[in-house]
Image (cartoon, rainbow, N blue to C red; front, side, top):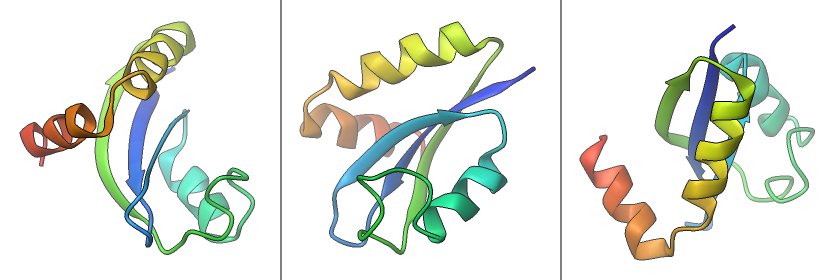
Length: 82
């Protein structure tokens, strides 16, 4: 099963990083306010980054690595993958 690490840009300009094995379903959940507490009142969203990985463990590790970055580093990551 393929897992996806994704970064959303929220309407307020903040960034949210998450993982899923079904990006379309997860985006629908975010849009309905059911995806994550953080994104509940920050829509609409733009998917700014996706990265596919072969396992949930690898996706969780990559998600943690991205979350550990400061904002300028995250923006640089987005700029290289746009």
